[in-house]
Amino acid sequence: METTTAMIEYRDKKSCAHALISLVVPFYNEAPIIAAFFDAVVPVLRGISHADYEIICVNDGSTDSTLDKLLAACKDNFHIQVVDLSRNFGKEAALTAGIDAATGSVVIPFDADLQDPPQVIAKLVERWREGYDVVLAKRVERRSDTYVKRGTAALFYRIHNAIADITIPENSGDFRLMSRQVVESLKRLPENRRYMKGLFAWVGFRTAQIEYARCPRVGGKTKFSGWKLWNLALEGVTSFSTLPLRIWTYMGGFTAVFAICYAIYLIVRTWLKGVDVPGYASLIVAVLFLGGIQLVGIGVVGEYIGRIYMESKRRPVYIVRNTYRFGKS
Ligand code: UDP
Ligand code: MG
Image 1 (tube, rainbow, N blue to C red):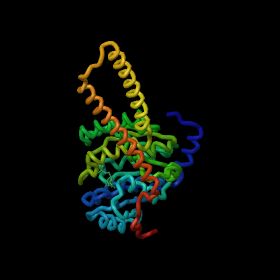
Image 2 (cartoon, protein in one colour):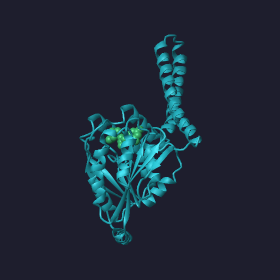
Image 3 (cartoon, helix red, strand yellow):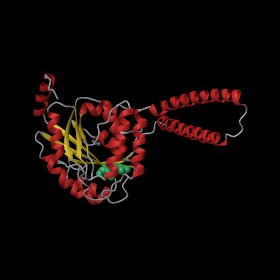
Image 4 (cartoon, rainbow, N blue to C red):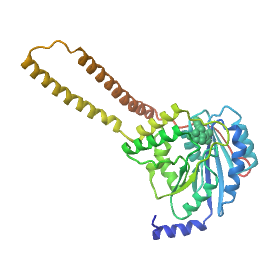
């Protein structure tokens, strides 16, 4: 990418300035890997020059000993802050809570399971210092994910990007760096059904990309079953596109035109050959086909009405039970 004069000035200012890096990490029943997480992440953050750090750990209603372990880590290291949500709100809400609590000049959402190597954080900060507002971490190697997950993810991105108003970069998750300005823009988006990957892409800004290989989880199990991923995909498409609604206008139009042509054909045939009683098969096919199409159509409309209904309640995205920060506050 070309480096403009404005970017060079910006970069020079930033590379000398002292930055505060906020790592935002959602935790949902991750007790077995918490020790390994801090052991891996803290040295990397300490090693970044001209920068201080804070780790915002969001406990997303865990039912195991995650909170206790986070609090123990928090007592040991005053850079660690724990935001304890009142129940499990889901990863998107937990990330929103963490991003709202972060005070850094850059904010980096990060998974607790170390599937994204912490060393990449240093590279993200390096690119940010070159003058970019967003630095995307793109997975070039996903062998740690199953074949089915990779295949369905690729299909999702293709469909989503073909019909949505925004383009979500393929193979990049929530792991990325955002400058304070980007974070402030993100906070201004008022919707409470938050599909973070879409919102990140929507705000825009100068974006750089780095590549990395995604590893297997260090322990524990994935929290995203096939059904949860399917719902997330629906959320993604319906958050950023109204094409699924519009499709029904065309479908209805085509079916109506077809029906008129067929009616003309029947009239002409009756006129030429007289009345023809048999026709049960074609009738039942037409009834079932149209019935099915109408039900799907109503389902899609219902999906959007559901979204309008949820948005109209204006409920908060998450509720914080408590925030913990020990030592220097
Ligand atoms: N997570 C969360 N709330 C949830 C589900 C997941 O905060 O309801 C967190 C989880 O603890 C982890 C991150 O989101 O830090 C990613 O989850 P996971 O690794 O299970 O997803 P995958 O990598 O399999 O897509
Ligand atoms: Mg994971």
